[in-house]
Every structure is written in structure tokens, then in C-alpha cells.
Image (cartoon, each protein chain N blue to C red):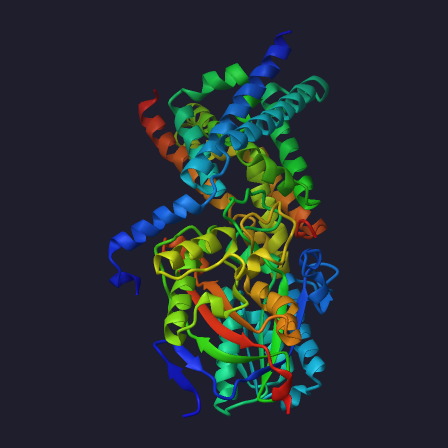
Length: 123
Length: 152
Length: 344
């Protein structure tokens, strides 16, 4: 029952973050690229302020899968590394914590480019 | 030419254009983004939970595995030309999750292959995702410096 | 002087240059539209047998040129001038075609207004006796325009309701001073760049409508004609929003533009409504509609007099990113049916 409740929270929080993004795109004419930048920066700031962690404990993937979660991982990695390694952690912490997603995107991007050609739709 | 026109002509035209341009449907767009985005997060959560249970990963590794899985599926769907159809329906529902980040890297990598592997695919991989990394990382470094001195 | 300038912006052609032949090659999506029967060839796919979409566009333009010359039974060596352009940087698709045609070449950039621009300049060359026959072309390709002006094809992005769909198509017309052909060109109006401050690159109809209204009203003033004098008035690719804006702007200027006379090429070429949004665009749009839809009807005499006004949004990605508004342009040419008795 608990996990069912968690899944409900994942769906609601994740969906809500996306719906806010859609409203921003439609209302402010921000391009999707700007939305991505806005979300990641917002995630970093909220996480440093200690406001994002409660959302992650509440909704798990609902808060970590959206790009704000990516920012949160950057921030948490930096803070943790600063605690453990001192000032050098300022530079190493963020990317270490997010290496998985970035490396995957770069690698799969190259592989996909090798295997597929872009196609126009409705052709 | 337009410099000689009084400002009010431009303003009047802007209002006219506003009147003639159909609105995007806000409620419909948000609803679609909501349910598709929610489902993507659900998939992320299930993969995280499953890998935690069956692949013997600790919770932070399992979370990374969930992200990598979503990135992989996005790359595949982008490659076979399905992702942009889903995105056309869902809008921010696919942009905001990590799928949007992955698609933003994979699609220009494919598109600019005709300009070569280095300056085409390799460089253009970061056309849309580059700013995301630039501002995300810089913000975290900047706040990291503050954190180093003040440790709140 | 043979050509007579009338009014501020209009030229009257005394020799009435004739469109000897025309050809249009389009993509598969256009080939499923209502004008399918008029096209000379419909490509099986967007690649057109090439490795890149840029080359596909180049081959499409080249094929339209060859087809047009073939229909007029004219050898490329005898053509004295080649005028044309496309939407790509440095009009590369057309330049590559000119490389193979080996005809003296003047490259034009008028964005989507290129077909009217090339016919206008071509008519001037013919009428003045400077060159004839003259080959006039314009072409665009959805895949090359998307990547240059917008996003990669596989990028997940929602199109706004005002967005237009770039036509994959190329049109070519051969102009000469003979007496029989598809139609003759009697007047041409060179447009001014008009910019009323539209910055939204996804609403090009709105950016171009003021230029269309300006050229059209100048044409009416210069020639003393009204919409009633025409079977049809065609704009290039204003789309749904742009054409209703044009009607409104013309009304404000005191000119009536009846619905049964006024049509937009951008709303004729596709019938699949989803994903097209506000209509078609691209210089291949007006070029292929001219060849497939307008010229055959002028030839048969179904229409006697048509005004063809192609519109262009002259923005670059750089100027757009720098926040500059979109300069609009429109050029018009008056096309007339050639009566049988004139043949002699």
C-alpha cells in the first residue's frame, strides 16, 4: 500500500512540474531550451537553499526525473563533496553526482547518430 | 522605412495580430504535459525500484540507473523517429523530464551527421544541451563557493 | 524606352514577356495534396536519392529547370540568363544547380518571395531585350529549412498554432519574347521592405502581411485597377493568419478584397490539416502552385487575368536571435491569358 501511495505521489509531483513547464512555454513564449535552463538553475538554487530535498523525500522520482532533479543532484553532489574534500569539491562534486546521466546522453547520442538518419514526419 | 512610422502604427498592428492569431490551448496543453510527464516519472521510479531489488544496486546507484535507462529509451525513440511525435502531443511533458535533455542532445547529433563526425555530430551534440550544462554547472559552482565559506 | 514605369513602383511591359513553359517538382506530402495532378513529378521521399537533404533540394531545383526547358523544347545552351534562389544560406541549392546548368546566373534572395522576384527581373531582361529566353526558379525543402531556421527534425517540439509548414518543392518558368505560351506578364510591382515590428519567427504570416498590403495597394494605385479586374489575386504564403490580416489591412486602406477573388498559395497546396497549422510557406510554395495550378488555368483561358504576389519574410537566424523584428517583402506580377488571335 505504501509503495502504491509513493507511485501516486511520483505521478502527481512529476506531472505537476511538467504542467508548470507547459504553462510557462505557452504563456511566456519561452522556448523549450530556455525552459530546460530555467529548470536546472531553479533546481540548483532550491536544493542549495534546502527546499528541494523535502520534495525528493516526498515524491522520489517525481522530483528527481524532471530537470529540477538534475539541478538538485548537481547541488547535493557539490555540497557533499565540499564537506568531504574541502574546496576542491566545489568543482568536482556536481559533475560526479550527475556523471551517469550526462555520459549516457553523450554516448547514446553518438550511437544513435551512427545508427539512424533523421526523417521528416508525415512523409 | 519603419523608423519613419509613428510608434502607434506598430502598436496598432501588434494588437491586430494578437486578435487574429489563434491561442494555444492552455488547459489541454497542461493536462497532456501533466499525464505524460507523470508517466515518465513513474517509469523512472519503477526502473529505480526494480534495479534496487534485482540488480543489487544501492539507492543512489539505482536512481542513476533509472536516469540512464530513461536516457537510453529516449535515444532509441529519437532514433526511430517516435520521440518527436510523443513530444508534439505532450509538450513540456517530455521536455521537462530528463527525456527532454536526452532528446536535445541526440536529435542534433543525428541531424548534423551530414556535416561530419567532429564538427557535425560531435559539436552539435551540445547545441541545445550545452546551455543547460553551462548554467547548471556554473550555478552549482557559484553556490558551492558560497557554501564552502558559510556552510549553512 | 520601351518599358514604361507607371506610378511609384510599377513597370508596364510593352513586349509582354511570355511564360513559355513551367515545371514543378514536389515532395511526397505536397504530392498527396489537392494540387497533385499539376506537378510534373512527385518525389518518392524527402531524400530524393541523395545523401543529404541539401543535395536533395539541389537535385529537385535542377530537375525542375531541366523539365521546364524540356517542355519548351529549348536547349540549356540557348538560355541567356538563369535567375533563382532558395532559402538556404548563400542560396547554395540554387548555386549548385547553376553550376551544372552553365547558364549566366544571377542569384536572388527574396525568401519566400523569390519566384515573383525572379519573374519580375526576368521580365525586365526580356522586355528590354537584354536576355531571352530567361529561366526563373525558386525552391525550398522542409528538412533543410527546419534545420537552418528551427530545430533538428527529431527534436521534440510543439508547433504553435501560427506556425507554417515549409513546402518541399521547386518551380521553374522559362520566359521569352515569343507570342505563344502559357501566359504573358504585363505588369510588375517591386515591393518595399515593410516591418511592423513582428518578432515571432513562428508567425511569419503576420510579419509579411503588411508588406503584401503595401505592394498590393501600390499596385492598385499605380495601375488604377481594383480586385474586380482580376479572376484571382494570389499571395505566396501568408497562411491563414496572414491572409486574414491582409484582408483587414486592405480594408483599412480602402480596398476591397473579396473572398472569391483572393486566395493564398499557402492554403491551397496541403489538405492534411493536422500539423500544417496556419498553412504552407517557403519559396517552393508559390513557385509550385504557380506552375501546377495558376498557369494551366491561364493557358486554357479559364482565367483571363491573375495577380501573383509572392511574399517573403527576410529574417536570418542571427537577426532573430539578436531580437530584431522581421522585415517583410512582397513583389507582384500581373499575368494574362494569351488570346488565340494574338498568336498570328
